[in-house]
Length: 585
Image (cartoon, rainbow, N blue to C red):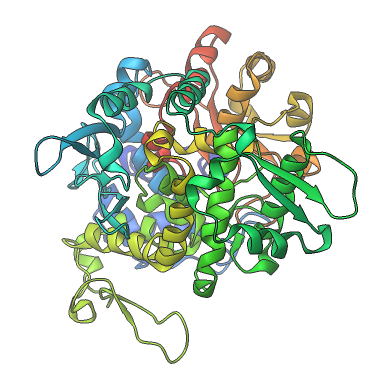
């Protein structure tokens, strides 16, 4: 593998000793992952010249970074070159697996993504579950043809399911998710749902609206619910009048009056009410939500808010009513939360939205020699969330179960389940219960999480000129004449829905912050502009763009023609984001 880093060009062009050709290629490979020349040489010497052995030694920390490297990451990144090398390594290994994406057409989407499959109920008369499966999996370590390095990727995800008593539980993707309202779903409806998931987003929204109308969920205006509210106590008044209202009555039209005002509600006051209520509920001061680890736009459930469950149910019903009536309310939730709402699998890479450092640590663990892993003194128990509390065992007797190369995937999957799901089980159950009181959950299962965000938040007006003027281009030496103009011409030709989906592919959210693209934030909350990084085009190993959501970066091959660029860049819009999430940094 050739070397592309500036460090390598300086070394190979200078007076450093020239190793044998094979060794030089290995040195370049390691330096391309941000390890120093000295580290690469030392690791290869200890590893008897074998690239994969040398990389194991570097990842295990056997070859320490130099003083200049420690803490010497890119400005504002907060990560050392060593840590960035870990992430880069992970990215490169997954790239070898993503070589299967040679033709991203509808046939690929149907055969390779997480799919919705029906399963019979125990009695054999009712289809109750939606099981998510993959045809192409990597359940055990496989050897990449490109570099001979074993890449371990846990593929088991978690989906939310409802017990017979209506309580929430989390099961593996192969077990399948049971709907809370399964008894009311006919086989015909379930079949229609499975087929509707393959529709383009505009057609899905039309399908959803048709289902709402045919199910007669919306009550007529004559059956409206009257409310008089004080603006200065809007949340308290709303909660007081609506908290005990049965879920089905939230489907009635609301007719709002603000005390001391003459306005009549022809829809505008209700939309204003939604906006104010949701803005208050999402504010960190309210205690129900907090910002994601990766930005200051999307919100995640606050695990400390276990005393606010009635408010979560109330908020869920507000969200359900907004969806039912077609209000775009500007709510932007984290990927794991959106996945739980639409019933999609939560996987380990979603940890980046909750605990970024743990996500990076798992990247490192997955690329360590299995023999090294067992010496790390890690067990199946997590530290107590607060002083004085007990350790959290990930499974019975977990404190006595040591981590090894053989149980690493299980460990990562159980940590994912606890961090993203079990830690907010009560809050999530209350929120989902409120939503599904108003909108049948199987109607929402037609959307993937990126489409659900657009459905809840509305499609943003994305200014392409603002986007381009606040984009940083890097590795320009690989770009061909016309590449930059071609890229922005393609983006400018898209609909707002397509631009939003593409923006989410790169940044993790379809929304532009207040102030425009100049205020785009990185995973540490710092301003991190959109970045186009040009890379060498290779029709076999690097044909399609790759997104790095924590760094707002898109790696774009330097395509030889605008036609090839348009085909490959637009392929991103045609694949299920659930399928590619594991391939993003």
